[in-house]
Image 1 (cartoon, rainbow, N blue to C red):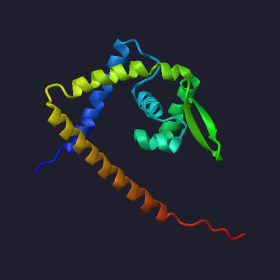
Image 2 (cartoon, one colour):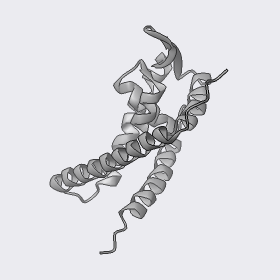
Image 3 (tube, one colour):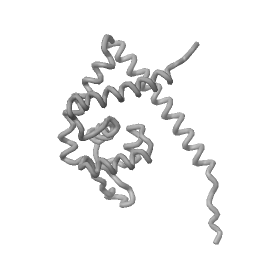
Image 4 (spheres, helix red, strand yellow):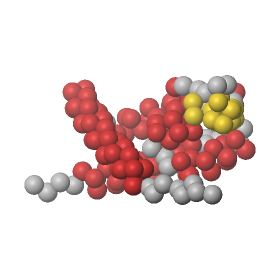
Length: 161
C-alpha cells in the first residue's frame, strides 16, 4: 500500500497556514500571525503555564518559541512572570490586549474549520478528528522516546577537580 499521509499532512499545513494568514489580512487583523495565534489559543485555554508547556501544546520548538514570545511581549500580547514556587521557572500570562483579540481569532478559526470540512458529514468529521489525534499521539510518543534515549546517551560531565 502506498501511504502518503505524512506528505499530505505537510501539504495541508502549508496551505492552511497560507489561507490562515490571508484571512487575517482580509479581516485586517495584524496584531498576531498564525503561529502567534496558536500560542495565544493555548494561553486563552490556560494562563500561567511554562514555556515548556506552551511548546508541548503548540508543537513549536523551544528555540522558536522563545523568540516568538520575545516579539509577542514587545507587542504587548504576553508577559513573563516567575513561578511563585520556583523563581527560575518562567510562566506566561496574557495581557488585556491579547484577551480582547480572542473573538477575532475564534472567528478566523471558525472560518478555517468551515474550509477544512466543506462537504464532510458529522460522522466524517468525527472520524477524521479521531484519526488525526491518534496520528498526533503516535508522533508525540515516538518523539518522547527519542528525547529520553537522547538524554540517556549524553555523557556525564567529569566533575573531578
